Length: 412
Image (cartoon, rainbow, N blue to C red; front, side, top):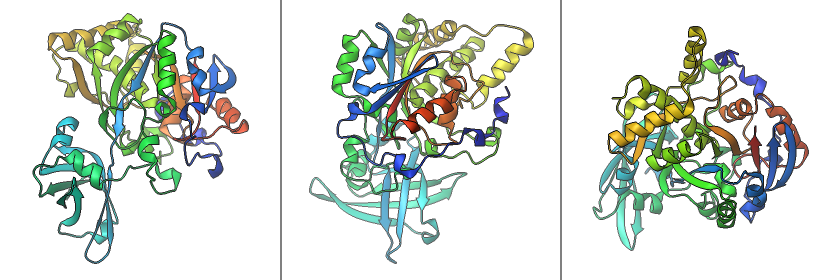
């Protein structure tokens, strides 16, 4: 199969608006669970998930935290301008960004841009009873965004506090409703820790402290990594063939401890959500790069969109064997130990679609995704093309779809 020639129209299905969950269930672990096990389909309730997993397995979660990335400014003319934060520009490090005081810059989307020709926009509000004036200036247009400078007149206030006071949580556009106060809790996983995402890793929204405790009781080894989910996760595939679709870059952090655990589990794991999948599967190709050149920088470990497929074509053409998964992980382990790094911080642009060979993830917990999306391509690759039977079952048995919808457990 030539993955690049896949027609996205082959991954369409009817999704009535009433099947899109506009709000979560009152008890997040009471959502329905579709279980796909080597072709067999059954259904259960999410809080029973641990009973479907093998004792002693390893499960990986994305611990990113959604930030209040949507900000509104009103011009003197009355025009409302929306500034939507995508990723840090200065400083580029997420942790440093949220600690910054007085000034910073982000790559942003701008809503109602035609009404903002020039000049700074201002907004005043209080933080802990003290007045703050926030100003934003549009510095330059970039390929898919704008460089926006932020400055504020209280040097004691961090940008994290600015967002908490003036930002709005960006719920998915397909919910077709305004953000509500309840979303600040329900649109975060119970284990979210590291600020940076503009969208939640939604498979994780089903987990509760009770389910996590039950996983521990079942002997499931839990590990966390970080991938900051960008607005590109909602980017539709507009090209007829996916060869012309450009995947968004995502920033990831994986600890040496997690690499050690992956190796101890034979290089196989259960992934919670597609963001965890993209991070874990990218690790293999980072290990490949280090196998060829052990002295690369973290930035040079970036995984390009088509690398997995080009590697597979090269191996096939040469009649060789791919690097074993454990060898690739040991390259990463050695690299981190050699350079005294407790974690690796880099990025990935990987696209996972039919024709992709999974190297690390052998079980997947995920939601039901939009028609003609790259996330549906990822699921299809995992179940070897059997996605339509899964989705037909879900549509025929009352499952709720998308971010606040129900869940499925996919096992091969």
